[in-house]
Image (cartoon, rainbow, N blue to C red):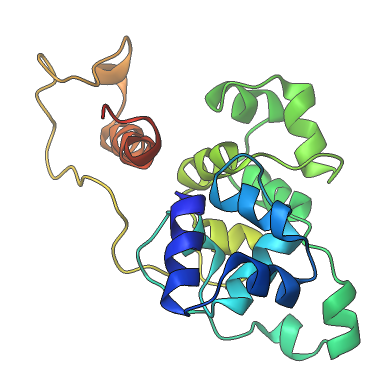
Length: 208
């Protein structure tokens, strides 16, 4: 999804890869790999891409179809241009706050996103960055947007409508293609999150 959206945004601005790369201070080869999804930009480069194309990081990652950038948060407003350029995006404290708010252990969160507790702990310590798929899993689990985790917005769910199936009553999953052991043991909220994650996976892993 990231590569497709970068390509579409670039073509909308009538720019070639070399021109965009120069504006971002990276090589054309690096930018080309982003569009081909053979390399993932780090969070800071992702933020620069969002700023350059006047959109938001959640849109680039396919979490929403809302292109509109967010107004700067108060912390950004109070930051000088020089400080802003040197500020790295760190998400550890946000993940820690979201987890402790739910009174969950690292081991519990890690099990949900299919990681070891040690691997997850690196994220909260900002010693390692989760890939985009893991990041979206975390956003769905904590019921927030990736833009909130990134600090782009102070609103937890800034998008009026997420690209997901909505459950309005207990679903009959006797013949559901996504049926898995334990699905029917989940409450409505849990089943909703499973369906949201399926919708997220469709663009990347759907049958051609």
